[in-house]
Structure formats: structure tokens, C-alpha cells
Image 1 (cartoon, helix red, strand yellow):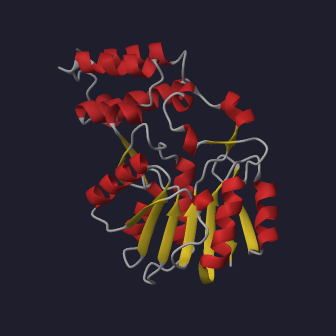
Image 2 (cartoon, helix red, strand yellow):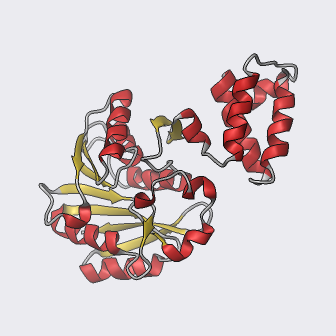
Image 3 (spheres, rainbow, N blue to C red):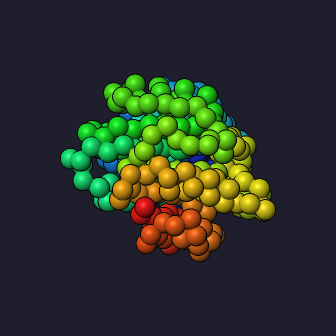
Length: 279
């Protein structure tokens, strides 16, 4: 079957669910995974055919059910690396890449650092830092044993050595050591914001990694910041990915705990998305 015909079918059946650009991106993701081809290959050779029509149609049926394409193929791409993902982990997002880039811009790659990634999920933040800062020692922490199992698989595939801790950060009295960098992308979506969440996230990604109660949406940030304040080395840094609607509240929280010069940064879409604080 002509792949171009499959492209037309994908766009026609997915655009009622996704916008046209996203539908095109989904098709191109599948093109690379199923055929090892890219947009340019198809443009240069519109007569490309496939012997995997049944597989293409099964993937399309899953996409129509709004199953994430990353779950269909069991992988996601983040900062140039490939990460295994499943229903126990969040799918890495572009704004989190921006957070990692900010961290890397803030440190010297030649200076060995102790780094703690809290709520690591697939390990995308901590493992990327481990690859990009090979002189540093990275620890991954998550409440979910299933998520940590995925992170360990990713660490093995990426050939990096990290420590892993299964722990509920809200129940931690103190950390076992001091760190130079603590970073976290904790749950931050309020229950009242669930109406904004698309089914491909709501129905397939772990709610414990996504949602917090409306009455205390900064519960994880407060706890982690309190721990960081006493467990960061001199000139240590605390980085967060945050709820875009709570930027002002986040800076106020960090200031109240005692952090210096907390900086709020917007992502490429113009949303308040991350903070950096100095001890």
C-alpha cells in the first residue's frame, strides 16, 4: 500500500481529535518508527509503499482512542535521548527539556556535582543530566517502584550509573546527604484544572504524578524546598518545573523559606514554567 494513502487516512481520521499539525506529527512519528523514514524521504519518493498496512491501521485505531503514540511504541525522545515510557511514567515534554537546558547553562560541565532528581518518573531529567555532566553523581527518587524500574532500564540503556531511592518525599524527615543541585517536576495540576487535560493524558498517564488537591497545590514544592534549604551545599541550586498559573505563588513560597534571588522563567510558549533558586 502507498504510504501517501496512509498519510491521507491518518490526517482525515485524526483531525477531528487533534489539530492538523499534531495529526501530521503523529503520522511522522509512526513513519519513522514503522518504516525508518522521515518527511523528506516521503517528499522525495511519493511512491513509497509498505508491507505493514495491518500494523499501520492498528496504530491508527489506537490513536483514535487517544492512546499516546509514545505508549504505542513504548518510547519517547527527550533532549536527543530515547527513553522507555509506559503507563507508570509521565511522557517527557518539551518544556521539561527547557528546564534541563537551564540547569546545564547554570553549571560547569567539568565540575563534579551531587544531583538529586525528585519524582524522576522515566528518569528523563536526572539521566539526561548524568549523560551531559559525566563528572557528576546523580540520584533518582520516586514514590513509585514501577516508575523507578523504568528509570533503571533507561539508565542501563543509556549506560549511566545512578543511585535510585524509592521514597514518598512527603514522608521524608531529612535527606541522607547534601547536594549541589536538587531538581523536581512534581505533581502540580489542580483538580479544578482537570477540565483542561486531554484524554490522551487523563486516561493513560499516572494521576499520582499529575494531580494535587486544590486546597494545597504547592504541597510538594513546599516540602522539597524545606528539605533543599537544609540539604543543599553552599551555593547550591534548586530547580522546579511549575504550574503555569502559580508562578507568583511559587516565588513567594521560595522567598518565605529563605531562598535567595529566586528566578521565574517562561517556556517557549510564554507560560510561567520553571524556577531557579539559590541557597
